[in-house]
Length: 186
Image (tube, rainbow, N blue to C red; front, side, top):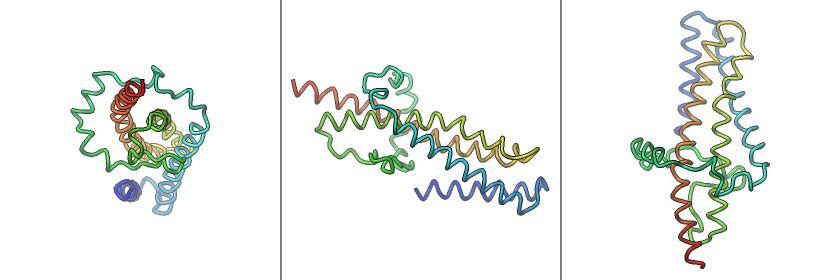
């Protein structure tokens, strides 16, 4: 969490400073617009998370083909070494009632299935946050939409791609565990 907040804070400072230095906006407008766009990102991302959390679980089930991870995708995650940095990514699922930070009940098929559903909900939340972040550009006039809102949206995009990669990386392993538990139960 500290890493994410640091990235956000540094990005806000750099965006505001560059706009002030280039004379794109007065210092107070650059600061206020940067804070506004960042707050809007949090509000949009949070609203999407709440909305998706209220959707029926059956839409995010274990066998839903929209959330299958291909072999090529698995190779990409291996190449990106997701396993090495995944624990540094901010996990806020606990705010919605289900933390995905630690696998608490690895021998319970119902828990593993719930974990997969929560991963799938997280994937949709983050994917919808990619384009939603750019809506802030509609709230700022003229050049500031490009010099303030766009950079904030790009930071938001980056910070949403990372958890998507982690969730997609974890899902095949969870499906493997669930498969073994179901076989064992038979």
